[in-house]
Image 1 (spheres, helix red, strand yellow):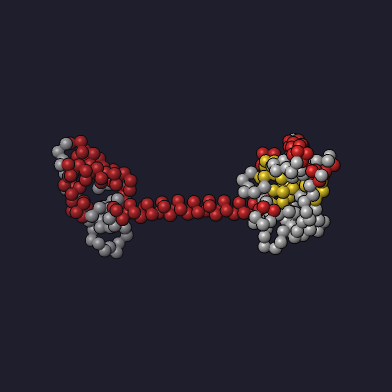
Image 2 (cartoon, rainbow, N blue to C red):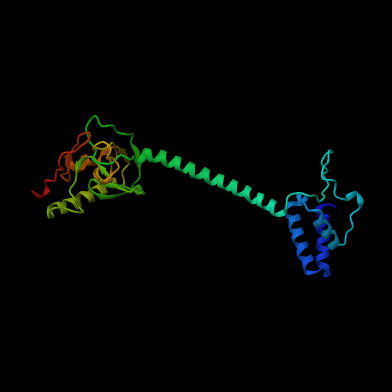
Length: 269
């Protein structure tokens, strides 16, 4: 009997109201399996007998279940036969779905890690510390930057959105606006920070990340410039440090390859 015919007979039997509670639950379960698996639904001989008894159907001899072993071609007609239990089929179905979902999620994670590594290596290198600012310092290719991608800490430090630490702008030193040593430095530090905000407000920005002037093995740690990275920020092609120095809001500051001289802070006398 075809699955659709069998479902119709089950529906008629359920509507008849002559079934026991057990038979009703049994037919509902078989009907659900037929809905889900169609012609792939498999029942044991015992289940088939209970099903035919509940719907009042006596299968012809020609539709009796075939012997377990058959050398002929597989029939396209639906028929119950001994196979895996419904629980085993359901477990296999769920396992397949889980494997597909896990594989897709794993591919997303791996792809995200690769993308983060590539973009991170280009935009936010792991080297930290004071940059040497010397002519032989290796400088990476300039990367376009938008104003929404960073915040300004003070006149010589910015922080890229999502970065754990700030980025020290190299080649100059601006007055401190957070922990000044005197009132004059505090005032000049606020002015340097405000001027930097003006320079980057509407300009075309680029950021060049540079290696840092730290002892070997300390880059990326708190022993090297407090864990900060280093770079040069350009507004419309001009280094913002050069502008601040020319306007008296910062002083030049160049480091060696692995160390820096004392930080110049001439504002407090």
